[in-house]
Length: 200
Image 1 (tube, rainbow, N blue to C red):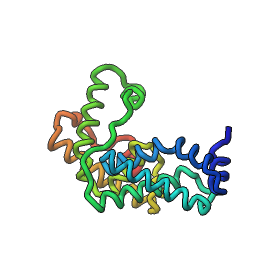
Image 2 (cartoon, one colour):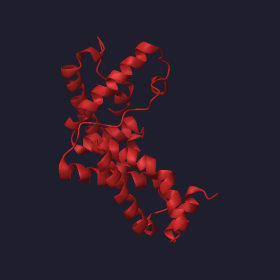
Image 3 (cartoon, rainbow, N blue to C red):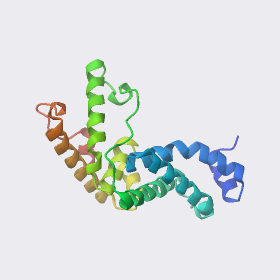
Image 4 (cartoon, one colour):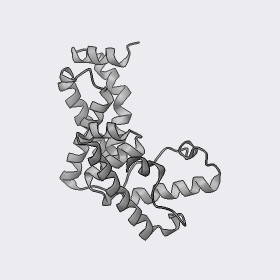
């Protein structure tokens, strides 16, 4: 079985079977990311189709000294942002993983799971209020789990610009949650998560 780098080399040399296998390994991630940015599954499928067409035509220009996933994320989010600009964002994002316990680390129990589910629904409702680049930065950092430095490389901006997009996105989302979902705001909250402190 060929590893990813071998698939990339073979596909860039015109091996269609290698390219098809590479698409199979990356398709879910591309569609998920496009869906999270555009908020629409049909749009995400269109974005993914365009991404893989571009990939087939331009894989020979991929710089193998850089991470392939970072390059693929960049192509995907750029196409998704173009889609948003052409028709406007929709206020829906793909839900977070089905097992809330995976995200809660040391927290457990039905109450914690209920709170996370409510937060997910609130976020999905409010996401359409974010500017495209704010939404993209938030998706890559908070949902995909990329480091700020990698988000910057994907978006082709500085880390400080990513932090600014994240600050504005969190501010908008927090204001929306406080207005429309006041029961989800913890009493006595400082308003900054550990991740937000890391990014500030």
